[in-house]
Length: 322
Image (cartoon, rainbow, N blue to C red; front, side, top):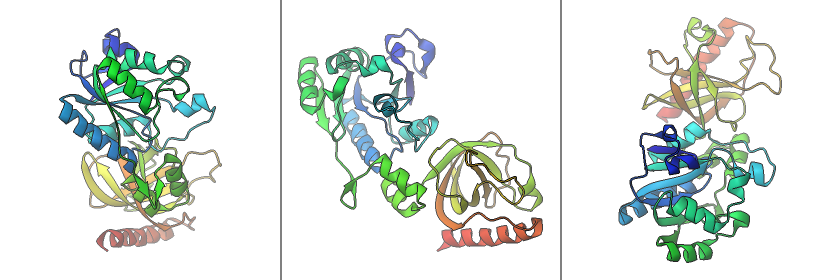
């Protein structure tokens, strides 16, 4: 997947910003959106984008944003379901061939639908087909609705279509609903909307080595995700260098040996990967929360903690063998 970083990349003014390509050489089938969570609704649109690209002999291309538009439009701090590197990874897996990554700033906010079409869709991406999500609108004050984009498409020579809307329990899937489900610990509901278990994504860093000393070596992950389930011990699936493995993880403050956590402290994620003896330092893991086994606890000492971890391992293995 090729990443075009900013509008300058479209002009060829900043070739260093183009990862894996020096120019736009292929016409595009385009889908525009934030794609926070890359949930089932997004996945359906991405599938339709790939199909559209195939039928129009054009490259499936996503236009998305480094920052959330609501931070500028509504003055709200948005807690992302997935961090940008994870979002890009999920887009790649969905079959996207190219991503235009934009900063949603005042200049972009103030471009009208015609300006966006001429500058980005036509001159920049050579768009042959534009796929719109339900209730999508492009340009200043959301003026570029489906009818307006069809007018512009007829003028500039690209087709416009609307993608399929996906619902769960009769309600449209939304990133807001997924955030609420994850924070409430409703992993099953989040799974139904995401199409996968809620995940933490992050790099393995050096810890204090206490897990190995206890007989249960752990990968210490700094989660980039801002939306995580409640603190506790979980049965997890771990994507390790392209291979899926099972494990058990503690999410929280590790209270037995650590100082009491402040409310502002970022949660720690310690993952014990079953039947794995390799070195994970520096690896980026996707840790999927499959089932909550118990809440986080403080134990009297190492021996009591070790016995509980052994029980947690047994319980987690049972989850995957049930």
